[in-house]
Image: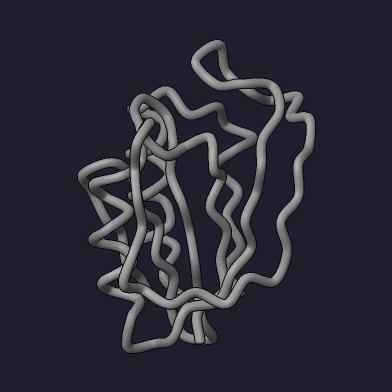
Length: 122
């Protein structure tokens, strides 16, 4: 199973995610000090699990429904990490600092604040 998080405010207005079963572990709403001017200061965060067989489909779906600019979603299992931006997926093993650096560089190019480029590795 992959575990991850989706910030609900990062989804395009009218977006729908269907046909990919998720196990919801927690839904929180919190104030974010590092929000950029293009992001709301309060976020709703959905923490979830998705079956290994559905991870690629989830990444593909998120590339279409994540809003721009400056949003991403991430999820991981014990072996690899998915970092999904609008229109782009990074998938790399836990022990690949170059893969992480490439995803972070892409995030910076979208204007994502540095403190937000902190996805979990495991």
